[in-house]
Amino acid sequence: MTRRLPLSLQPPASGGLMRSLLWMMLPLTLTPLLVTAFSFYRQSEAELTRHLNIQLDTLVNAKLIQIRQWANQQVMALETLAQDITPDALTADRASELRPQLEAFLTTHSAFQRVLLVNAADFAVWLDLGVDPARAPTFSESSLQWAKYEPRFIPPRLWPELDAETVSLIVTAPIASGDQGAIAVLVGILRQEPLLQIVAPVPGLGSTGQAYLVSADGYRLGVQRGSPRAQPRSETIRRVLDQAASGSGLYANADGVTVIGRYVWINDYQLALFVEQEWAEAAAPLENTLGLIASVTLGCVVLVSMASIFFTLRLTRPIRVLTEIATRIAAGDLAAQVDIQRNDELGVLAQTFNRMSEDLRISYQTLQATAESRARQLAITTEISRVAATYRNLAQLLPEVTDLIRRRFGYDCVLAFLANESGQLRLHEVSGGPLEKLKSHPLIVELESNSLLGFAARNRRAYTETQAEAPALHRLDVRLAEFQSEVVLPLAVGDRLLGALVCLSHKANAFSGADFDILQTLADQVAVAIESCQLFERQQSLLRLEELVLSLLTKAHRSLRAEDILESTAVELGRALGARRAVVRLHSSGPENGKALEGRWE
Image (cartoon, rainbow, N blue to C red):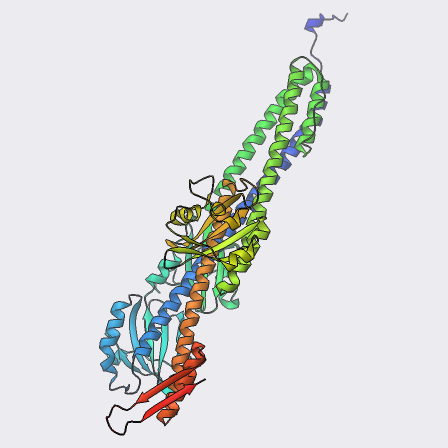
């Protein structure tokens, strides 16, 4: 006879429904969570890589500008020395007379380690300071084939004749004499330390970040030949040297370590620039994020399992509804709401769930809008920087930059001020707003004035009228009275102030502090472009002056009569200076039979 137990002592139900619900609900709940976690991880990885590439590009571009400026300075310095040497009596026997002049040059130019005077005909060394002539290096036609035609920076390589241990940095400048061409060539041996001080710093790349230069023959600058790192070898370095390639990404460096880097082939100097950081260090924040995602996912798994078991035993329907809504939200439907009308804890949970869903939807929309705005601003900044880098004079740069800033950022008016030596900020370009009125009578603001423009320029920081107790520009000038708010962005390179950008809007309080980082970064890049234009214009002026002097000297040597020399001088000066008339007169100093010689150009 089978004995039945009391109801309270009956074995518990097998839990088939609970297990079925768990097997159904857990995949539906965890799959979107894992997919979301994986997507978040991949997005974090892509964002980290993008930020690293931007940082590497910024470092490489800044170093390229500094390297070219430094190399041009050394070439100009040696060229100036060559122009100061009188070539008429320059021979091998008289070369030693230039020793004091060369020694003085080495004293005043610390970047030069050594200066040689070489015969332009057979490249024999006439003078080498501090070196026995018997041990002086020899140069071949192929090694200095262009040296006797123009000043130049010789591509660095290992010159055993000069230094058997490290790569030699050489600049040359010819010493010419009229129609004879080059008589001799100055060869300057540069120290590597100033160039390495430009290349070495890698701010923001952690303890494993490094930047270095590799010559075309495969030697690393600044490393002794006997060192294992003197000739770094990797697939990337081989491709850069063989193909003159440039690029970025993940690759194995010479030590076999995976790095994220940017490499550029500098064709003018036959050098490869590498800026790198070990990927293990760069990806450390990403690994922390992965651990956090795993912990959160595991916690969610445990919580969902416990909650499913508990609520399934008591009441299945509300849990099923909540599970379905949670699945929809995890899948991206943030507008989903729980429709449970109860006055117990489940009803409170449903209402709380609805509020959380609404808050999450608002937060997600706000975050998405902010991310899109930042991405758009970064894209605009990149576009403006790329456009600014293509111009070499301010007359083209300022109109294009101010117009792009106004149109891309949606401002009503953008003003560009440049600082002059008198301590003033003078308006140079206007985009939008009362253009004709401002161009006919430009604005001039004193740097020490009690205005928002002067305040921001002195402090080298961006300000709006709500951040500083100083009168705004649109309140000081009646022509700008139609605008309601403004932001001032100083243009500075280092401690040197170049000018300022003023952005105006018809809306009140149109500028927020959240936009300052993007705008200031943009202003810094515009300042670098302005400085490059100014430097280029100064170099062009020097080049025109040198061409004028060379032309006058050439025509003077070709002329046999004083009248022809004076006439050529007047013509060349008149053309170079843009004068409508030029007169050069030469009077005899004797009291009798004095004759005046004259050259004219009209």
